[in-house]
Length: 98
Image (cartoon, rainbow, N blue to C red):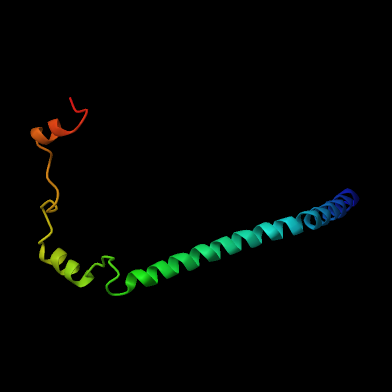
């Protein structure tokens, strides 16, 4: 019992010394991380605000129209309008193709 109390006191002293020794450096590092995170968040927020303005050139989905097309089945069992499998002629026209 005496050993465990002595060991606990010694461990506590060591921990206090380690915390005191590492504290200024760790606080500076955590401050740097916080400032970096805040800067990134502000940049992303301003970008999203600009993108949401009318005429900004960013595409936005009309979710109501999309849901309606999904519910009516218009988008099932068909490929996208821009997609088509490559033909033999297209394959040959690509540089380096066999």
